[in-house]
Amino acid sequence: MRPVMTEDDLARATRRIAHEIVERNHGLEDVLILGIPTRGKPFADRIAVALSEIEGRTIVAGSLDIGMYRDDLDTRPRTRIGPTEIPEPLDGKVVILADDVLFTGRTIRAALDALADIGRPAAVQLAVVVDRGHRQLPIRADYVGKNIPTAATEHVAVRFSEIDDEDGVWMMNGGDS
Amino acid sequence: MRHFLTTEGMDRTELEDLLDEADAFSEVLTRPIPKVPALRGKTVATMFFEPSTRTRMSFEKAAKALSADTMSFSPSTSSLSKGESLKDTALTVRAMGVDLMVVRHKETGAPWRLAEWLDIPIVNGGDGAHQHPTQALLDCLTIRQRFGSLDGLEIAIVGDIRHSRVARSDIFAMATLGASVTLVGPRTLLPIDPEAWPVTISHDLDAVLDRLDVVYLLRVQTERGGGSVFPSLPEYTERYGMTDRRFARLKSDAIVLHPGPMNRGVEISHDVADHERALILQQVTNGVAARMAVLFQLLGGDHDA
Image 1: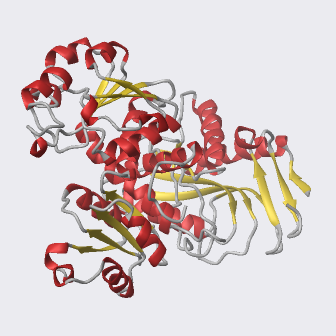
Image 2: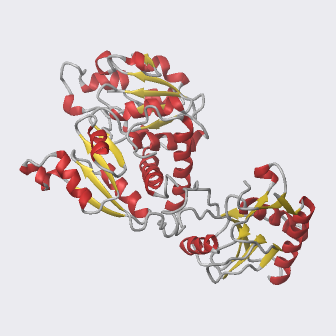
C-alpha cells in the first residue's frame, strides 16, 4: 500500500476544486452539489464547506444513490442502496456530481440516468478526487483532485475520516487488500 | 437471503438492512417518475391461491416500480379448477420464465413447499394463519419513520391474534427490533401457547392503554361473529375497540395502526380511523416500498459473487 495523497493534499485539492467551481460557473447562484454514496458524499460535503467559506453563506450538498441504476447488477456483488437526498429541485440547476474515483465511467453513467429520472438540470458537471484512467464510456471529469495513471489490476483507495477514520489516498497492487 | 418466508429467526441486521433500503425506495416513490431500472428484464409472478386485492396490487406496484415485468395467477380462472396440483401449477408457471414468485395460500407452509420444488426465490405473501412477513416489514417501517427506532417502544397488538398471520409476523419483527410487545384480547382469541413468543399477555386493554406508543388493531373477522370463540360485535367494541374515549387516554404522540380492511365502528371508531395519528394509509404506501426492498434483495445482484 503506497500513499499518493496526504491529508493536506486532499484538503488543498478540495479547496482548489471549490474555487474552480465558482470561477467556471460565475458564482454559485444555480449550482447544486450531489455526492454519490458512499465516498462521494463526504467529498461533496467538503466541497460544500469550502464553497460556504468562499461565498460567506451556508451551502449544503445532497446525495444521489446509483445502486438502483447499475447495469452490472447481475454480475457484481450486491451493494447496499444508500440515501438519495436532493436539497432543492434540480430543474434548471447546474448539478455538480462528486465521487471519489473516476475509473470505467459506469458509475457516472448510472448517476446520469438517475438524475434524468429526478429532473432536468441545465447542465451536469463532474468532480472527482482521483481520475485513474481506463474509461469504458465517453465520460470525463470537469474537476480533478489528482490524475493517477494506474494498471487495471491496481486499486485506488480514497479515505475520508467521516467513514474511514483517516484522510488520504492510497494505491494498492492487485494482490494487496 | 434466498427466500423471504418468515420474520421468525431473522436477525436485527437483516431486518434493519431491509428497512434502510425500504426508506431509500420510499424516496423513489415520491419522484416525478417513480420508477428505477434495477430489475429490468426480470419477471415476478404473483401466485395468489387465496383471494387478495391489496397485497397483490402492492406487490405488482413494487415490481413495476423496479422495472420488472409481472404476471399474475388466479385460482378461479386457472387449471386448479381442473384438478392440477400446486406443484404442477408452480412448475408450469416457472417454465414460462419467471424469476421470483410471490405466493399466498390458505395452507400453512405452502410457500416453503414451493421453495423446495422451485429453483427461484419465493416470497411469502401470506400462508394460512401462519406468516405474512412483508406486512411486518411495512408496519415496522411505518413505526420507525415516526419514532426513529423501535427500541424501547411499548406496542400492543389487539384482537384476534390466534387466527392472525399479521400478528405472528409482527411479533417477531417488532421484538427483534427492540420493542416490548403486549398481546391484548379475549382468552379465546389469544394463542394457545404464547410462552414460546417474546410477548406479554393482557386481557384488559384499558389497563395497558396509558403506557403504549403504538396500538396495532387487528381486523375483527366479522364473519366469525356470534360463534362460540367470539363475543358479540358490540361487546368486542366495548372491551377491545379503539373508541374515541380510549384514544383520548393514549399518550399524545402514540399512533394507531391497522392492516386493513377496517371495520369502522367495530375495532376502530370512525373518528380515530381518520385521525392524523392513525397511520393506516401511510402503512399502505410503505407496503410498496417495503416490498421493493424485498424484491431487490432477492433479485438485485449476484449473491454468490
